[in-house]
Image (tube, rainbow, N blue to C red; front, side, top):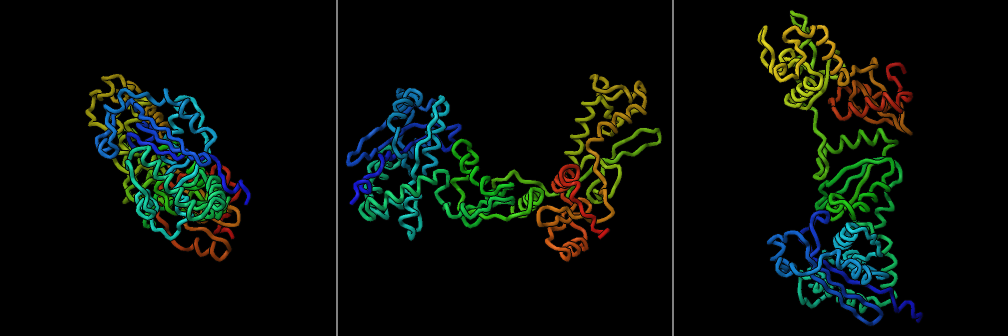
Amino acid sequence: MNDKLNHYPDLAFVDIETTGSHFDRDRITEIGIKTLAGNDVQVWERLIDPQTYIPLNIQRLTGISPAMVNEQPCFSELAEELKKELEGKIFVAHNARFDYGFIKASFKRIGIDFKPKVLCTVKLSRLLFPDQPRHNLDTIISAHGLKVSARHRALGDADLLLQFWRVCELKFGHAKLNEVINQLIGNVSLPSNIDQNLIDSIPVGPGCYIFYGDNKIPLYIGKSISLRSRVMGHFQGALTQRKEMKLSLQVRDIDWIETSGELGALILESKLIKERMPSMNIKLRRSKDLCAWRLVEDSCGVLTPTLVTHHHLAPGLQENLYGLFYSKREAHSYLKAIAKKFHLCEALLGLEKRIEGKPCFGYQVKQCGGACLNLTPIALHNLQLKTALELFRVQVWPYSGAIAIQEGGEMIVLDKWCYLGTAINQDELYELAESGEAEFDLDIYKIVKKALSGPYKNQVIPIGMQ
């Protein structure tokens, strides 16, 4: 038998203890390494001063107290020694993204680049023991009769990984494990619950992707013009970003919906997030309570903003609308902000009680130009107000009826800024156009408005003219 099949690269079985799970905020308190080099086992173990507080629940779990680490070296003092210990070895850990992510981040803080080959024993267990229902360390201990010396201490848990490797050697042999190493270390950036075959099946084109947690609960929804690259980007980012690491640890499955282009993906993402409410998205808000300002001229010729609430709001049909806000509070905050920025009179704007001949509060603190005292002509105040609001004018729907935007092999059907659906042929196109009113959505309004003023303005099909 070929000797190369009986030997694999040196394996460093690594475990760490930390002050918590946030690798950008928390710090390492202990590192334990058992290196398998040929038939020899080498041991490296260090307590580390995290230079931060160790929470009581972590102290109880690990048994590592502040007193134990106070006189120990900090990570930067051990960095070169640790780097030398791990150099040229395969980094083996259970749920390797956690241990590797912490050590990589610790090295990065002191300017050292750390990029070993990584082997995750969760992935190893899943691959070799597919019928085993769970693959956490306690399950592996129980399933394979491993001997526990010091659970939740770094070296004790590293020893458990070495024991598990020995179990795999006995059951599958050196040649099979060499094959497994080559298979798994190519998938370093994937979470332990995600198979490479699933990643390979994700399209390279545009669309939306959905990450699911336990029980098929949506965790995160995103969009991209290159689905597979974007999904892989999340997992690569998990090594340096807290949010991505949290997502990577929780994801259990991935689904996707293809679109013909970027506009379709943007609209679909907005709809999916509101429908499925994934826990890790910054939730896009529904538009049921929208309101906007309308300028009304009073008997003195003063343009006064009047709030139009959702009961009387018809965005896309009404002239003289400004803003579109999710709440009355947001609308008033905006109006106050432009009053301060442009030195407008809050009394004339209706934001405070107006008393004829008396200055508003803003004038007294030099934030009003004096329109309340006729020191600034009303016509000029009106012009300043209209200029300030112009950027937030709600655009009236510029077409006589429904339109379609051609994108790839699909037609995105829209009317009065509302998304009616996506058609792939003429029959579907007219069916959607005649389907009736859709609910106005502020996020989709912004997406479509930008598209029609930019790259898609020459791809519009006015359906009423067909």
